[in-house]
Length: 378
Image (cartoon, rainbow, N blue to C red; front, side, top):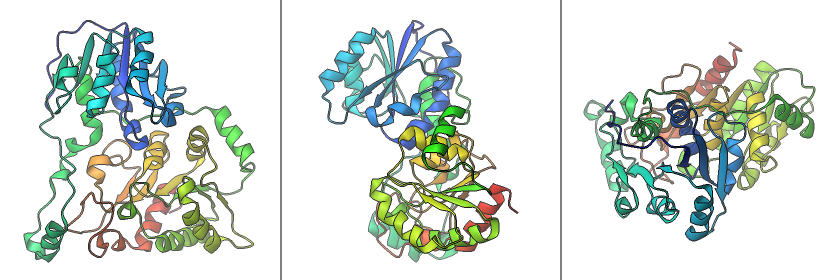
């Protein structure tokens, strides 16, 4: 892996990291945060984060302070907050012009981030892209039609098979520009036993006999990332019959119709399940995911959270690539990241322009066996 040469920097006394804007991306930044803490053990490390993700960083061993901003809060208000922090160095993890402009307007003297159009002027040190980086370009419908029309002998392994293509290396590469160790670590989050006990009590999960399994059937990005609800339901039924597990159904408020369908199909006088979609705070979600023996989920934020808390995950991948954004440390044998042999995947589209073969090709039996393996039930 190409490591950027450390720039001539003044070791920071107060270091600001401009964090990622989405839950899964934020979790994937945690290895870089640990490497920064390792490099600057005495620095005060603050993270600038969207308000919706602020609680993610509670009790995190690499973070001293959270500076949050609300959705729609203007850039000058954010810069004012940062000026009050008197930071002497900022590392900008997102690639957007706004994220670089925030730290520029705050007057932070040292400002590092990737070189990108419309923002380089706002940074004092730009970092060149990694040679191993893979762009997640959306395929066109015409390209997909051409790929699926090819005979199997003409189909090639996608470039995303490179083990250094994963997104965690993007953030580690930036940390290495400050002299930090770029070697990968597993993403890690923290939740306390008290939080777990409080969540159990609030949602009536204490006591429970038998294992607790999690199910997250939604995906905010779009339907191309969602394994069909009928398959989730069939897999959950069989797993429950074979393990006598209690299912916890997770999701946001927009997922409530989806989880209600699954709950209705699974509910019997003898079944054990709790539909928690739209009912948990972020910290409660973390506590309950930690409680689960395994999580069956689509490629979505809670998948990353569960893996970072040490809970094994089983994930059917369709339009996205586990090699780029899979949960946990790439290659971790505890995770089961399932794909089908589909030449047009990953396409990175929100909706499938053909026949959804990438996720329809993943059968219920394969997913069931993966969940049972991860849970230790086999």
